[in-house]
Image (tube, rainbow, N blue to C red; front, top):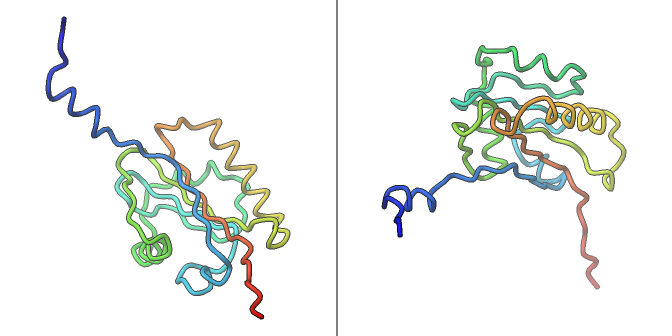
Length: 149
């Protein structure tokens, strides 16, 4: 019977399983945060965690943002504002690119640009491999209020 080398065996337990996350925030939480109170928004980071694209409106030619190689001015502040909202740090090293996009849930109200951006992102997912691109979504959800007697 053959045995696995101890280092290989241990590495099976520590393999990073980086998966896309779907964050949900109420409109009130978004307004209280430092990120722009609009949707759709796109934040594209390279594998060094540098912000290479930010937009706060519908972007029909989403593939064009992957040609950018220059770090944006004020990118550290935008990045910090995003991480403050998410309440966590992100590991960018597992993928060539990491994209965060914001949209508004239909229950909050119609957002045609959000739906259009989601369609473009779905096309993007078919063009780029999961090893190359990790996509996280930030959805502004409907806030449910409790009625007090």
